[in-house]
Image (cartoon, rainbow, N blue to C red; front, side, top):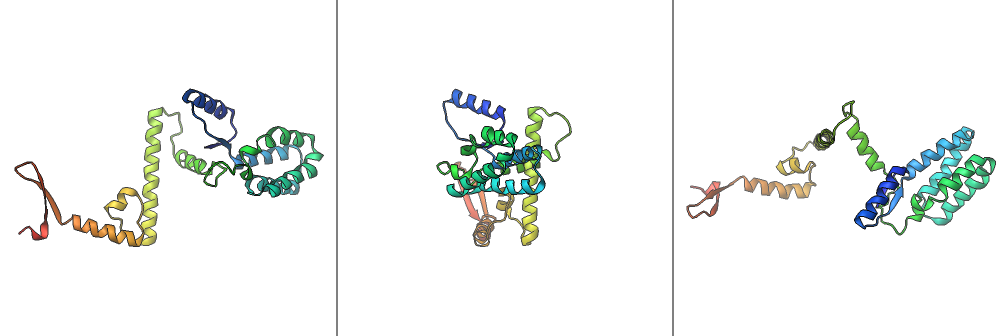
Length: 219
């Protein structure tokens, strides 16, 4: 499953990939982007603020309700109360909303596993995070990959720092590696294993075998 905004370049790219690799996946349109586009067009149609707010409430139901009767009732109200007053809005709904509703409305996605998502907000958030302090110039693929890796690493360390600050816990070597503080019960078990491992030494014997010994009992 892939969730993106409704961009023709995505449509072309995904169609080409599916044909070349002989695979099939579901391409879902981001409901949030559909809503923002609808809001923009509603303004262009000349509706006042109160009408637009009411239309957005209806569109929100269409996009996120899991109940068919509720979502379709909202769509019916949108058409009868507002699209009937604007040929431009009616045409927009006919061309861009009704045909695509099966690709962004939650009640239409029941047979597709999306982990409850019908927006690409997670990807957009990460995209914003990466771009926030990117150099103000074109980057090569190598430079871009390096920047992304560095930015994600800083983000991981910032999260770890914040967790440590809030819990007042000093991360052990395992937690430093994975980037988060373990639950208290699991942390206690892991810490005991770390403490025990610190008492061990590993040496190679004359017959090329490795010998593990306990420092406390070394004498």
